[in-house]
Amino acid sequence: MAENSRIADFRNMSVAERRNAVADTTGLGTELFEQLDSNSFTPEDAADLSENIFGVFSLPLGVATNFTINGSDALVPMATEEASVIAAASNAARMARPKGGFFTSSTEPVMQAQIQLINVADPQAARTRVLERQAEIIDLANAQDPKLVEVGGGVKGLEVRLVEARTSTYVLVHLLVDVRDAMGANAVNTMAEAVSGTVAAIAGGDALLRILTNKADRRLSRARATFDKDLLGGEEVIDNILHAYELAAADPYRAATHNKGIMNGISAVVLATGNDTRAVEAGAHSHAVVDGRYTSLSTFEKNADGDLVGTLEMPMPVGLVGGATKVHPAARAALQIAEVASAQDLAEMIVAAGLAQNLAALRVLATEGVQRGHMSLHAKNLAASAGANAEETAIIVDRLIEERAFRFDRVQSILDELRSGVSR
Image 1 (cartoon, one colour):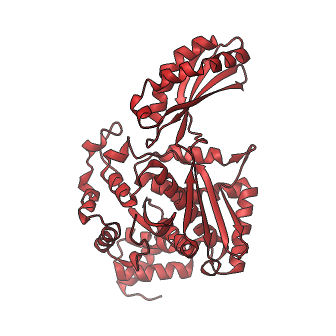
Image 2 (cartoon, rainbow, N blue to C red):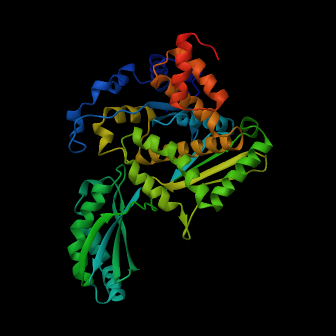
Image 3 (cartoon, rainbow, N blue to C red):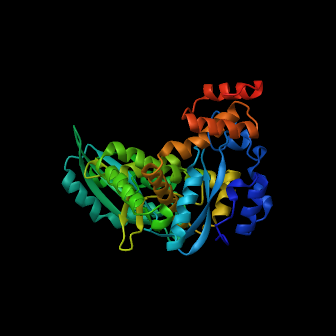
């Protein structure tokens, strides 16, 4: 892991200086960053990942600093176009450092494949027949991926559910597959297709859908952190954060934006490491539905010392093998920087980043409001879009913050004033 994720003045360094700092902190050579330059991933490379390719699309790639995870420092790679996300996660991680940082854990990396059986005359009896022969079905599924079984993975169980739909009772057979260091979609889909004929014959019906579910509730990762009350700003700030959290827990309108804040951190790390953001997001939001009500993914409490304790538990189906994790040069570099040894390590890092981002957003909302910090970065982007130089940008940002007018037309107007010598 990183020697020390607390890199002084990191945000004010040049890109070259940041590269040197990351290389020094991780012990990786600066040649790692050569694969991040714009010409290292060509449209020809991208053609292996998608269809109808005519180019490639780049996003800002950075690292969140200050993270301590299970006693070891780490730099967390994040790819995002949204201003303030990386800075906010880094700041929240700083506030957790005095109390030990983030403590994480995971379940085994179990994904599920569903086989939908239709036209079953006796669903209850069919369920029992399938369970009677589950050993045979599991053996057949595992025969599709002997390498996965060899490394300790494979089908670990089978469940059968009856789902009452509008016109039918469907028999759904779930294969519970330990996919080890893969995200697992290809493995579980292959297994489901291979056993579907046998399962349908046993049930006396027809197999229709044979595909994984992105409700990956057997593959959970957890993060916990204690945030120092003094660094947060004191008792009143903590009480306001708790009010903000409790509203998210009670109201789906607030919960949607609250959880989006969590996903700002999570999706940035998932994307940076070449994993499937849509699968992770689908699993996250389905997990946020409890007893038919959409609620907060995270929890916050005040401990006996008056510090704020945050926890986050959610599905995290990510891998280190397959897909863009090995093909995309930026994803390979991000994984080297993250220094994770397994998919579970990566999942836990991602959930820690989500909790940090969540806390940072709540603290801003409970104090100065979201616009000041977030929009100052947005103002810089607007100024850059208008062609402002560094000196002009500093003036424009100050003016926009003072006026609370974060609009491109106002940026152009201020820039015209500056260049014509007209004062306010």
